[in-house]
Length: 323
Image 1 (cartoon, rainbow, N blue to C red):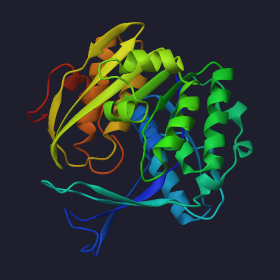
Image 2 (cartoon, one colour):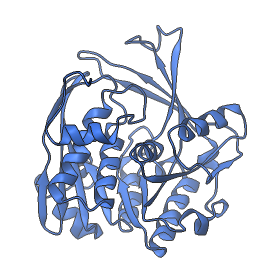
Image 3 (spheres, one colour):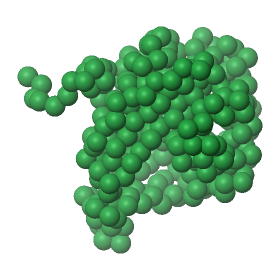
């Protein structure tokens, strides 16, 4: 089955270990971005996963594309041109000091691209699923128009549309995000949101988030993710899945995290994989939560864990040396 994701891929620069930005003399380089991360996970699990974007026509843009190609992602729809690849700096927190992200992505090639540049007929030809996040329309008016055009094109061609709210306060204000994401969610079949954004952004009642999201935006499937933070490296996560009035809650995982970034994208990828393959409600949310948990053990943005590892953890098996 063919899944398509669309968004911005960036260069991520991270100080070694737990060094602060002001201490750093060297940085580890990774590539990633919410929708790209989902595509990598799906490709890693054997799906036909395509990523749509635009990167500059120079070596750094090509390096970003190559990072996806090495993981089996179809990059034929990644356009070339524009001024620059977006960058973000990520500082790992520890103990009571939180992780910190600084963006340097204004006027990136993707953010400056236009909806008419993309060949929607080719992109969504034979597509079963389309995934996008709320980060994309936050990048500016052009990116907002691309997001709406892509959702419309996917729906017209019969693809299931999933949207992960993924509100980023450093990219736009709540009022604007609420208005734009509200209109975008009306195009979604599947809504993914964490509990905090459901309540703060949309004013939903605790315990009734899924019901109200379905009623307000018409999403038939709603997934809600939860996170409890003990400190910067120790979290507990779990998820809920609501379909047609039925609800399933995943196992909860207490984790010592190697990398905080990408866990939500791994949950989204796990959910997409599960729904594409017709998993029952409980199995689907367990698979998504297990994928998210395992991603936190991997450095970088990408969820580089195998299908067998996710299925094993979702089934209650973990730890031990694999011999």
